[in-house]
Length: 585
Image 1 (cartoon, helix red, strand yellow):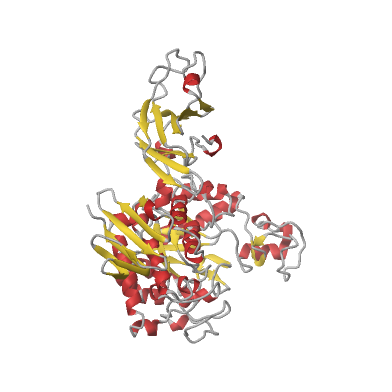
Image 2 (cartoon, rainbow, N blue to C red):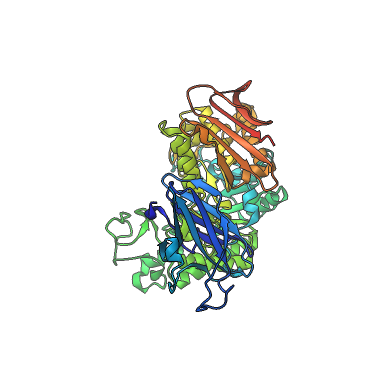
């Protein structure tokens, strides 16, 4: 047995409480391991520590096995009667049996050896305050991301002087088109008909740029977007339709017009805000925005976005006040933290404690593009933007050498990184204001476009589409992905067929619990091909089967009742086709 491939620790995501009564236990092993048991029980069932009577746990087989690229992931859910757990594992491989404890691997003889002090795994106590809790409503939500300037111009009275006429096609980050909050209010009925239940707004606070990630005033709506009364009406009208609102918060850095930064430029170390920033050399030329010389830290070397020192108590308190203001006064439902991996953990923990005390079901989302376990321990973010899933999906359609087995490994990796409750709160996406658009990435291939959307809407978490994805809006990387929404074409019915297919996927996601389930099982007979097939089960026993034909030939399939299909003809799934069907019982 490959001992180096075996790993467990009594910490998340390997051991953690799902709720106040249940614990999830996970174990990694090499693929040669054939069977695993967990022996578990209360640490004190035979008396206190030091008792001469040997401790014996209850032996339970772990049958939930997921395959990763190089290892297997075994899972079990337990209900410790007295809220604490002592346990070890028994592993079988190639005719050998090994006992895996916190101190390492033992044979049966060593386990039974008189006088040996066995170091078991221990989870001391399931304290309710330590259970990671995420808002239940998030897993039910289908998000729609809006870049306000390019979505809809509803009030021309707040247009900037240099506003341009609405147009289709490529754009730059220097151009302003007048999209605003009033325009979003006008389109709420459109979003409701599409099936959207959550709107994620990129920054709306006052700032100099079109993208608003260079904040000037954290307590004001940018005048180009409207005013606070309009935003209040947007939230109120959205809530009336069952649509939640999440706003983008840029606390890692600010813009050059942020009053504390202007004071620092003027007064240097004499400014009371000097330590709000990460300044390494004074004086410096405020007109020189190249920060590669280290004079001060900035976001991604953009000197126009000086980095805030989120280690400082006064900075933490200031932004806590900002968050509390928007939550209390405007009743927003979620906060998305831009560059959420660069602010301090202390900052995240303090804000979570303060904001969850104010509103326990507030959704706290971190923008992190990589493994985010350090931020998903239950005391910082509820979820993160699930770019590992997005990149894995993208890679499968880019790299034709990848098989259904590789696809399975990618999916299982994406959902074994974090605690289950955080996996349900992941923000799943295929494109955004920071990436090329899904249709462009697939070179206009509508088959690949809808296959990937089918995956998005059948994965656990909270799916999001970027504005215009419902019509296959095109665009390359930033800034081209931020094109104007082509309302004239939409209203003329140009994209009616695409919109109807996306609307169906959203409806199925909302109505069918199996679409949202964590229970995913792949067809192992097709692992060596690019024909992907997986089954999902809901707690109520209902299930769905998903078929994705990414091969160059037809595939014979026998689905149940069709829920969604493309390029499926009389039992034959054509190349590029997708079927989602009810599982036959």
